[in-house]
Length: 101
Image (tube, rainbow, N blue to C red; front, top):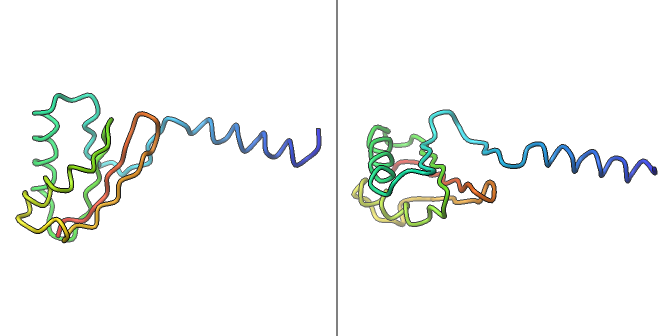
């Protein structure tokens, strides 16, 4: 097998080994599989415990984009004050990252 093909195969296997994992800090809020009331309570609890300028990371099993508006209401700050980044980390996990204003 030519070296470039072997290298591609090796890189592909390495990528597959990491598939399905989410790279997030230990203090991330993981709400996957929780009921809506518990999801909201967990987000509120963690976010309110943060000081201004601290990072907030959320892991969800669905697109958490609407959480940005919830966070702005909790902080009593306009939604535009939040720089919220949402990305799909795996087919079953989304990550939301922001900083508490």
